[in-house]
Image 1: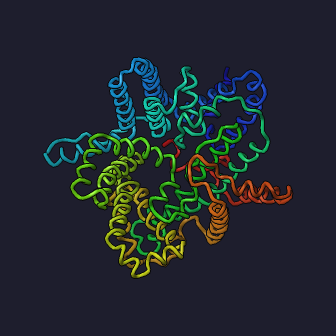
Image 2 (image 1 turned 90 degrees about the vertical axis):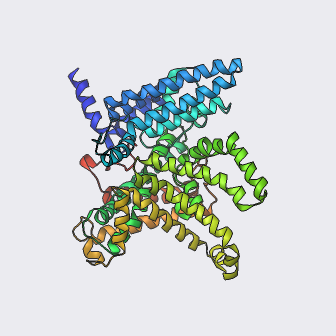
Image 3 (image 1 turned 30 degrees about the horizontal axis):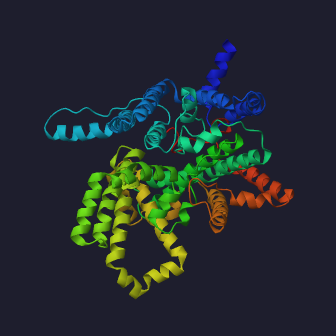
Length: 535
């Protein structure tokens, strides 16, 4: 008994996807998964067991709260079936509204309650009253992602797009599938059903592809992202630092975030491939985008798709918005620019505010990951309409079309500038950082980072591996994909697999050695925490 408790105690601190202990534990599980579990067709039960262990060892006691929204949504799905058989459309609409509101309120109560208490305190202090202060409830692991998955599962059933499993354990197996609970991707039930509950034979090429992608993810995290984090921390956290070092860190944060977050996605996608369950792509070479709209189709793609399908489209199809759009077109004409776009902009405002708020209940997130993009995209469309003739006359549009890299650089800089507010402690602090970035520099660029643990060797290591990622992603873009979250990101691996075994072994052996030698490790040679871990 004591041995069992000691094992649980050890796993409680080491059972996460960046830990070496997790992969040691996973090897015998995979052996059972592809032998006994396959023979008796209970592979999904093995995955459910691992997922429950993973979820509660990482989330602790507070993770028990996750059963509340899961149970409410599942019972509502059962009730939905009864209402649908009776043809009760109003009942379906009322139940849909209840499920959406319940999951949103549950998410806000556990994750973003301080946003509303902060607003109350602001007005209370103005009125000479006492405030509530910050309220932080212990949140279930991955609640931000699970809430969106639960809403999508119910609405898909209510709209007749998909069905739901009658077995509640199957429903739970999808909700807390261990690779996706901590940081996504936001996988819909219809996307995973056929693979999650199928019987999978061991397929060595798929397993090898999965292992390769896991290694690629650890390279991006340990070798690149954790090095960039040192520079970003100096730029953001050094009081009195001004000029180029601050500006450099503000733009660099977007790259740190990309390599950190996409590394996690590579690891979980690799885990999914190892067990025969492909996951939707979340990052598809975003820095090769030519517009802000495109970059958000390639960056955190499952979140953008979710917001489009469950916020924007229902809003635009609602009766009141349709009537509003019809009035505008009747007054200004069907082809009028403003009549066609104003309703869409109203929907986009709701979408971008929601996406910013989902990232964090504070104004720096609401603006940095939301409203700033709404303003940039909307103003870009207006300027393109108003100044379109001038653009043609001056040759600006021709230049951007001819020199594709100009559009990509412009898009990347605008994206990085907006997302830089996410790293700041507040919206005002973000503006203060940008003001300091354009103030006279008090220290030389290299001297500003001299006191950190970053050295010249780290710079060249990070630069080399960033170029490696750039060339691989460039290959993916030239190969024609992926540009949709349902497509697999495997063109480079497929091309490499057609080379002789010596070339393949040399590439991945060099990659493994690079991670082992140049990786920045925490205790017990584990990776440091992911930025979106447990989000």
